[in-house]
Length: 351
Image (cartoon, helix red, strand yellow):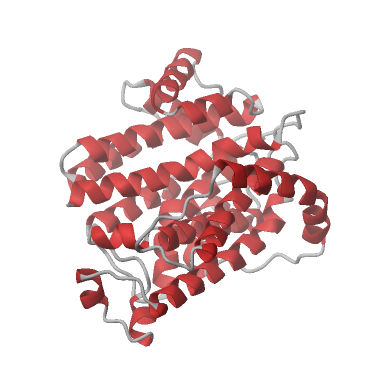
């Protein structure tokens, strides 16, 4: 089964017009990864727009759920992105629970849900980011539970980094993602602080703690990355390093994500990419000594859904190519930038 060429062309045009970075990166991806990634991304991009422009988040989610129904019945809506998405989820046996969980996370956002504990925050991050990591792992031809678990870890880590970076921005939009129990333990009343978000030593320590959790998950991801196709590993390593660098930038700024937003400069990104390229061999050797860790309880339902969905056909991992680490990094970074963009649009819609 292959996605219709005209539908793929329409998906590329969509991304070329609104997601130039992803479109450019897709030109240098192994074709077996690039085309299905484009199809997934195009559908998610239209889903973002539906939430952003629909005027009513709950109604938008209901419409997206109906589109999922049709895609998984093999009767997608008569739109190129929907047809391409339906082809890809069928070809790579992507369980419905994965995109459905992403929509569930979006619904949690729409309801202004807050998270009392770290495990509750894990459950949210599993839906809005772990799902993306899991779907992309399937597109890369890997579905072993231990590898999918590490992809989910990486997605959760990236989302925690987003939360640590955006504490002030979220608070000013009436959003609070920091575990409420952490705030209370630090002597911070969540409601009072949300009404007047200011930087303080207790908030700095909570941000540090959250970054520490993210760093532990970044480290766990090493095992999974090393079991991806060789052509995909450098890009995933680079994406992980660049996202983790946001945490280092926060540390350099005194962990103040209230009065300012940590941004990794272009020059610093180049340094990180160069360092990552030099450490690839070290990472590979380290990964060989790492025993697979247990999955997060909060991502287990994604892994179990994949285990219960055998592949319909053998998916060959992408072959290696002589491309730069920057080339392979961009598409992963942009996928997670989509999540950030969606969060920003959602905050604007709720206000």
